[in-house]
Image (cartoon, rainbow, N blue to C red; front, top):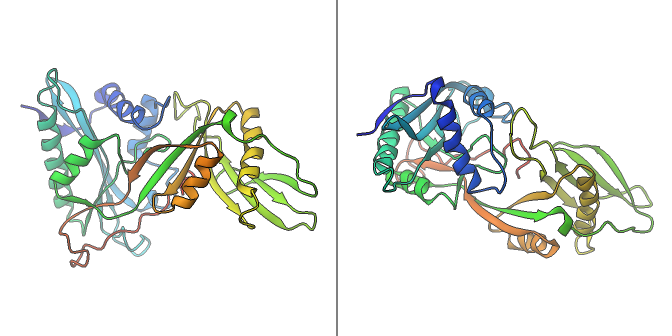
Length: 321
């Protein structure tokens, strides 16, 4: 019979392997280091909005035959006025990972069930106002419950969690497939520091800003990610004049900069209900990588049930929009 217990430092290699299995199913060529995983259990500095609201954190593992087959990271948010309304006094399963059951691991599904029961029991001991859930692993573009994790979705749904948030489409392209940078008469490009990374802004002859794109090339910082070299994402893409090819032109400028950075893959994120934006990116050279469902909540179907408001999930601080 599998057993559930708190995470021990001696579990670090097996936990990292388990996390990397889930990361690899979502983003090609990305893995995280042991140090990245251990640091994320203590703090998430990139999440500068929600991380300061956390009062307690605990990591649990499920072990079968002395092998870590499932793990979860839980957060309890403070109940004071500094915390956002939707998170005040709440508890969250920040991420939940488990190996699917196989002939070699026949107890894996049972271990995931026992671990989820332990998570709900811990949230009950914390006496939180509402129980939330996510899948935000310490890797770029891995958050929510991605479609390549049907086994995690099943664990959440069987435990009574419901998807109450939005669905985002993750898109990817090779930088070499981006449009070539083209000269436009009277248009200059200025490179500055933006909110989410390096900002490239197009200005007309009259000095008017015509649009900008922000590219985050820091996803592969060596102290955080052991294998994410060559990966960047679009932190922001804004055009003032629609229908004049400015998105394609700006991404062409960004592609030139990314080649100088040694980047070969670029990620983008769009809401699943914005098919027009998705089609524009596909027309430029992107392809759909996966979809991920953000915002999970434990409780009754009635969204107006007392004490259980559907949370508004803040945009992550690492460039995802």
